[in-house]
Image (cartoon, rainbow, N blue to C red):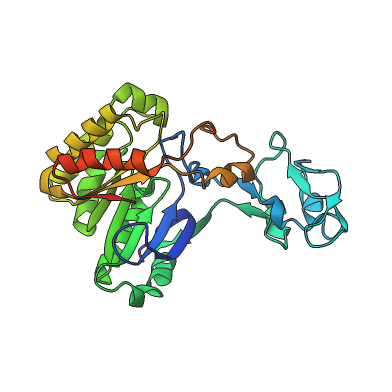
Length: 317
């Protein structure tokens, strides 16, 4: 009997309209080899689970305190009492001592309010597909499944098997990828992938290393590789003022997209946003680019025009 492939994910989101064409179910895998300074999903970066704490949900130790009893490492402290948001009663909430916490997650198991949560969970391909099939009636002609991350190619056995099973169910598959993996893996998964949502973050390799933690040579090489082997690409360009949104980098990115030819079905320009900041707070991490502000409409329109000038189909996403 074939052993079921297990993946480690941090979410499966139904009715997703931002992760490829139409209405989709997005499977978010954990683990990523990049460390983009602007990453809006820090919980996706590490392959191992971390303890996430949403203070807003905590009901206070006066009503609960189960996490204190569950923690054997003294990784949980108690803050000074403050008035509850629900009433005028005093409420003493907890905080995580990250130096002592070993991410055993015992506290999350007993938290009745869901204030303490692990950042991921195991799931088999069979169970993931079962979840996906519940949404199949909503996909229509364009929709389907997107396997995202993190970097889904870092959990290749799970991503490959799930893509293959979806194809067997006549469900279209998108792979949302940074492009940073062995090229042979793309060769294997192209037959089961309708579209690659492919990030291009910076065209200069030294700048790429500084901003994302990795050089860009492999990323560019794999984009060319996918195009040469008949794969389809929807290029995504995160646009972050002060970091990668200068006109020279945008011009080089647009020229590269044009060189990929008909493989590129669409270029999406993604304006920087700060919606991920609360996630850093839940993990007690410092947000790396707190001095960057989202771009305005005029700023984005100037970048869009660069891609239009190359004859590319472009969209503000």
